[in-house]
Length: 313
Image (cartoon, rainbow, N blue to C red; front, side):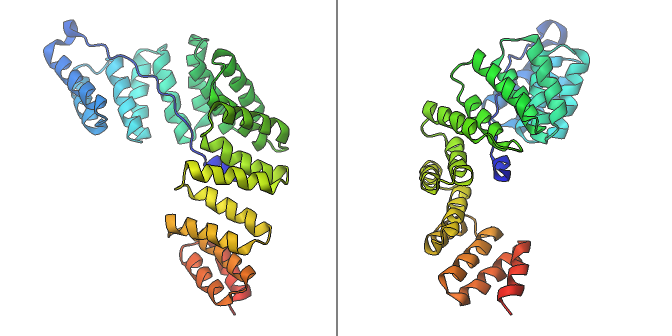
């Protein structure tokens, strides 16, 4: 289940309206704020920061401007700077549910799950109808590996938003990620996510692994992984794990073909060379084994060194 942690998270961002204050700050503040908003609309976030910062210098306690700068830095993946401005905003307006909600994402993406949980909980307590805030409480609990609590909040999200496909998937993930996986419940919710969205990569990929690892149904495992490849033909993980399944079945040629795909996509991916070396060994083409192990070792894949000691004397 470790690879499931590599899955990308879907973000809900609550876009709020910037409040301009002509009376307090005059035309110059408004000009800078509008220039920042225009740049934001064009997704030129660096320019938006520049213009909003000019407005902020004229009105350092304007909570909307500070939150807006925090949001721009979030989009730029500058989480440290984003926190500075959300903290300023919340110092002046502690009960701003939107600022708490958005700061929650900064903590969530930074892996500071306890603080993310606190912010999303504050936002949800202020608006018990917010399915998004409820969902992200679940994400925070999942980040803390408190999967039972995460499941509770995802199920509450489904009460607020009954067809939320993401919640179906995340519940399935949590059941699968428990220390003792509940494979039947995981399968049930992966199925529901796929029923709601036929081309949803994540539940297909994870259901394929679930079939293979927990149900020992390799045929269904391959089918889901191949479908996930159709959806995202450039995602190397589907090829890699499909190859590992073939290797476990002693289908070494098919495994090698999968690893070739991974290397075509990511020629600096050390594990792919290591796994292909194992496939070459299974096929019986020994001169290729050490060549791939050398490459894997040069890319920093530690297991290749041990493999060379055993096979490349």
